[in-house]
Length: 389
Ligand code: P1T
Image (cartoon, rainbow, N blue to C red):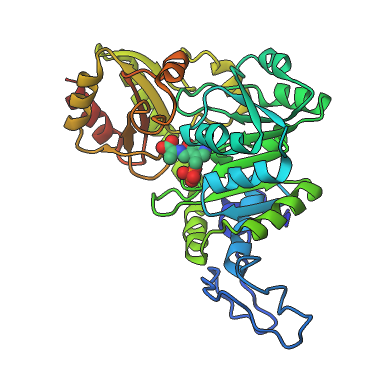
């Protein structure tokens, strides 16, 4: 699937997978059509037409999206799924079996922890959570049953950063798979495969789709043996996106670069302004010099993204009052869309974690997560400021 024809990120995002077909009866569409057919007729029993048999196995619109996804992460292969969690499930089901152990960053999307702790645990897969900001914690957690390391960087919701390159060396030395969830930065700001990861996973629901109108997941990788396993399970298990979902995701990807630039441009302005506000106790944003992994972040990534987490100086009642006053930010789960969202991790995205675990990590009642959209930053700051005041 690799396409070296386009050099720049925006050019790749716009053209990969969607080149107009001007031969073999092609119609020259500049946008890949939404192929809604669930099945494909053939002339001869043993010869699927143009490689298509049945849309769960492969569909022309999904194929175009998968090609685009691969190119964004400098990968050979891309695979699209019905959600980020479906993509994560396929990785675990394809690479691990009962009795295997994985090491994961202690701060992950609540739904990922729920998947590991409440679903795969019933199939004999065990997890050790470690603070991966220190790679030595990973080395200490390795057992003979360990098969895989699972990272998010930056993490959800505390925006901790880990050193992908250093951890990939540990993975290689110990023959472990390294999976990086790259949802928070998107391929525009970070490419984990280039830093030694084996697989990248995204909730394409977020920046990749970018418009809060489609749920999707993706996996990008370059190892053909792993790809074959994943592709087999994509078909065997069937958690695929619809052709319309694939179209929406591709439409979103075309503006990924300009959206990411604006998300990050707005986020640093808000992070700096929040840092100065007397009602804010602490601001966490990887682009602030006060972030503990600011230097690593600058080295590892090409930008700091659009998510800010902060602690207000108050309790849950102050949080509720503040959120109720907002007029531009919508109080909603999810992130990465063009519109700004605000949420309360302890009661929303990370409510599936037990309270003691949340508190140990720092997901306290006064912690708020913001997904900075691409609106005018003055409207965003005025909204936050009037609600804080
Ligand atoms: O929602 P879904 O497309 O299934 O993706 C799950 C997922 C995976 N990885 C990360 C880092 C995520 O943030 C998510 C989903 N997160 C939210 C819905 C949220 O509000 O944090």
